[in-house]
Image (cartoon, rainbow, N blue to C red; front, side, top):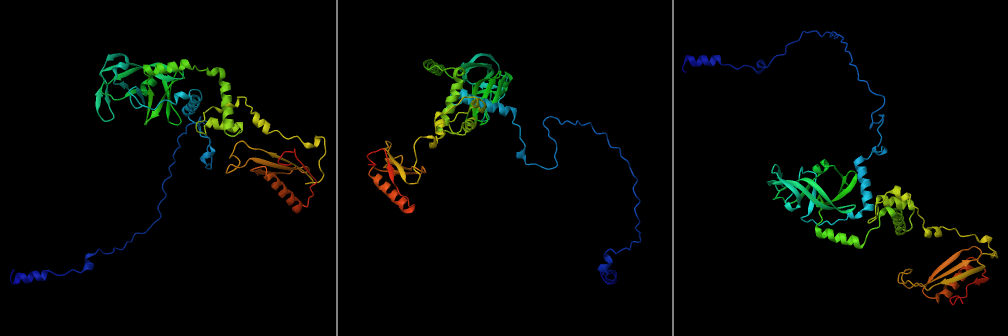
Length: 405
């Protein structure tokens, strides 16, 4: 661009002030007026459903203030209560069902709540079977296997009446399976009822309301042990050699003996306290027995009765007592003690010396290593009484033993 054009461009270009670029304030001339009230709209309240005055079961009257939760009795679940009572009964009547061996063998069966079908890999356990390959099983490591047959197994399990045979249907034969499984689903469908113990260590399997067998927890799973022919023969021979006395004939005597035994073990503790401990099993190796049954058991402890006897008053006895204290004293020595070490830290205490005041029945007792200490103890006591109490000792009575002579 040259000459006149260049000068014209310079004349057109000029700077614009910043204030002219910003938006300017525009004055508002609007007048604020009161907003007219909105029209009144009447709404009809829908009809409320009729509520019964009597609250339904399981509810309680609402209160204005919150109360601590421990003030309310929370009802125990019926299944938990039944399991608790069942476990107490089994512990008292059939403890051998809870003390089964924990060793797992090829005859151990898992009582599984997550498997919808029972299975085994041993065809010899099936008493009858039919060809069927309609099921796919996923093993724990992820591998999948199909069954070849479905049938019925016969297991010999521990029951309250000894070892009894049980038939379980719909068991799949899976040749590559590594475990034997009983399905809780199929057991429930077959009429069984399964309850878990309060401790979680056992599962009780019932049929028609009666205990059938018990599954024990081992390594995080519940197992039942199928008894082999050899094991059944050993138990059978043992039962024949030592037959059991029916519990119905001596149930009361058995409870009384158990109550007496733990009463003595606990230092002649009060009967009610012992019953409470037995019902809650507060001591290791203590059987669990229902408190309601124990309270009906007749119980009498001759030792407790003799120790609670009161001494007869001496006032009704013939004779006279000294009118002055520490005027007449009686003394006697007991020993030698046959059991050494019970009454002394070094096992040298062998005699006891008893001194009794005839007027006040106040007594002093000394432990002695030998009879030669009797004279020393008596002399020391008499001098102290005469010096501190200003008593005059007139008579000393004894049985004439060698220690007092």
